[in-house]
Amino acid sequence: MANLKNFVMQEADRQSSSQEDTIDSNKMENFYNSALSSIKQMNSEVAKCADKREQLHAEYGAESFDIWRKEHSSQVLTEHQQALVEDREKSSRDAVSRTASAESR
Image 1 (tube, rainbow, N blue to C red):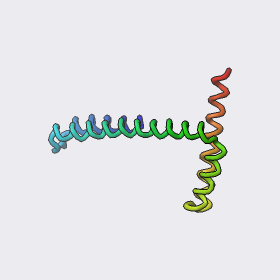
Image 2 (image 1 turned 45 degrees about the vertical axis):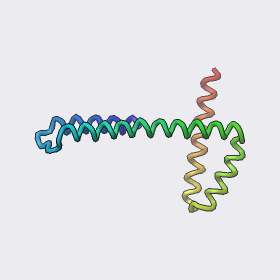
Image 3 (image 1 turned 30 degrees about the vertical axis):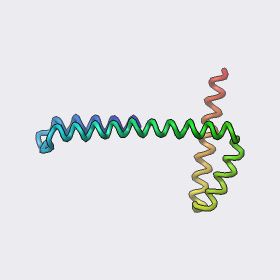
Image 4 (image 1 turned 120 degrees about the horizontal axis):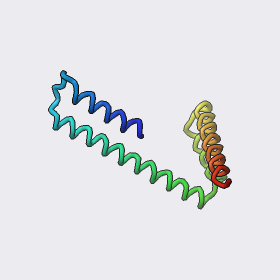
């Protein structure tokens, strides 16, 4: 999300310095403030979802989640999409494992 925020800020700067600017500066400022507020809200929602997922994993265990994910994937995704999801999950588990190993040293 930082990249999106940087893009919004750069675009605001670019447009404010543009001589072709035909947009009212107050409207432009309101638009960019709204965009930045939306980014902040989205970051908050993503963090809440991650926290909720961690809580559910702790409560039900990773094995249950793997079973549920595979069952759901088989019902709604193509085989190719299922493989992509499984690859992503494996990469995520590997990253968490590496982080945990590094922290325990």
